[in-house]
Each structure stands twice: as C-alpha cells, then as structure tokens.
Image 1 (cartoon, rainbow, N blue to C red):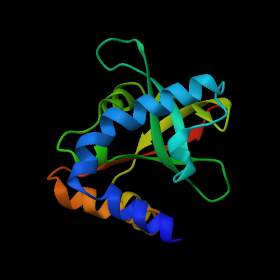
Image 2 (tube, rainbow, N blue to C red):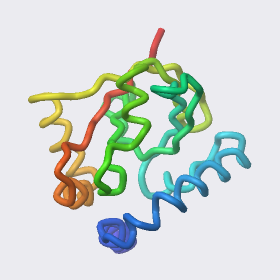
Image 3 (cartoon, helix red, strand yellow):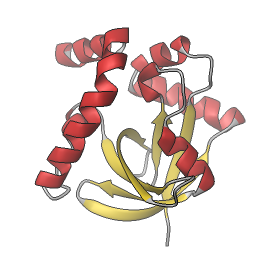
Image 4 (tube, rainbow, N blue to C red):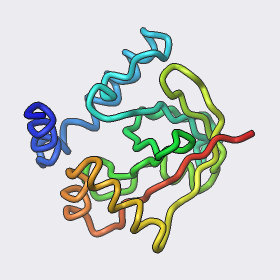
Length: 157
C-alpha cells in the first residue's frame, strides 16, 4: 500500500496536474492500441476505460482514456471530470452532455453506454464513495471553483 500512497500524493501535486494531461493520455492510447484494447497503462493504479464520445461541436468520434470507478454489481461506471485539478471542464464532459450515447472499451470489450450527469443528493453520495476510492479527487476539487462533473455510464441494450 506504500506505493498507492506515494502515487496518491504525487497525483495531488500541481506539477503532476501540469504534466500528466499531456503524458498519461498519450501513453494510454498507445499501449491500448498496441495491446488491441487489453491493457490500459494508467489502469494499473486506477480502473480505466477508453471513452468514445461524439464531439459536441464537430460531431466526430472522440476517444479519451479515463480513470473510472466501477460501481458495485459491475453494471455501471462513474467517470470523473476532474481534468487533473485544472480550471476548465474536460472536453469529453461537454461531449457527453451534448451526446449522452457513447461507447467504452472496458478490459478489452467494447460496450455501448449511456451517460447521465449526476446532480444533487445522488452526486453527493457518489462523491463521498469516490473520495474513499481515490482521495486525491478532494485536492483536485479544492483547486478549482467549478464543481467536478460526475457521470454514471450504464450499458445500452
């Protein structure tokens, strides 16, 4: 568990927030492609998915490797729009607001999903569980004036 604590501490720093958005997604995409969807490098610490959403303005497919919190029962996932504690909402959150039907690659399987933005008491309950799951999200939230967006993804039939 020492390794996890070190990673949590490092991931809470401002330096990490500056560098990580440029390095981690590129590495994740490359490793995911090379392993034909079987490995997501950042998922060695946190569960992760590759989200394919529709661009809010362009209408084009947009792929983003993202950390997620699988929910109990294994039927849904929580995506966290932390943007590494940077000021703006990540683009993928705007894409899901405009086009909630998306697809994720989860452990090498492509699944069609629908995203719902969590609000109110439901968001508060999930946020509490999320902080127990990965405490650095509290640092990210404290750094920004915006409320970090949380989405629940559920499989489409």
